Length: 229
Image 1: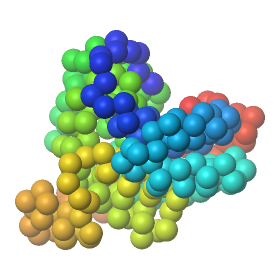
Image 2: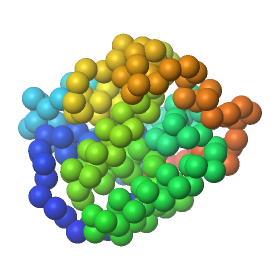
Image 3: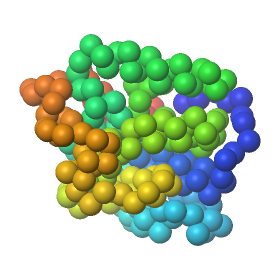
């Protein structure tokens, strides 16, 4: 997704977790399944990394299902439900005019770190893209973005855990690389960021669901899945 001008990593362990989590949270492809052994090996080498056990569980899940099934589950989980949005500013700004400015700040952060961004049709706040940026381009700037959107990450984590989705493991792992403990519930998330009143997704008028905000993708066959990498 991103053309690189690399900077020294902050901590290699966090970079491994961020890169593996980002790849697992992207649309499943044949290339992802082929890369699973290498990702397992990377996590094994950094087994002390925060969130590594949760990520290992997700890798086992991905390796134990056929591609078509994984793609259907992914679309059902992330593309057809706003409750599991992978777009960080969706949780805080929703479909509002302000969100356009926020998305512009994501692009500015990428460019300021020397990254040439190719979004492949995704919005710049797409979590797998942010994680790749943190892992491969600028660990400090990437971590800052993740911390700024900690509430979005925690709300996504809670929603995936409530769904009992294996993908929760990736978000748990990412949250574990950030300072402090994860809040136990939504009320605690809002308290953590000094919010009162409605849940963020209720405060920005997200009803009715706007399909233009979360790009939908068809469930591709294994033969054509590379177009979604």
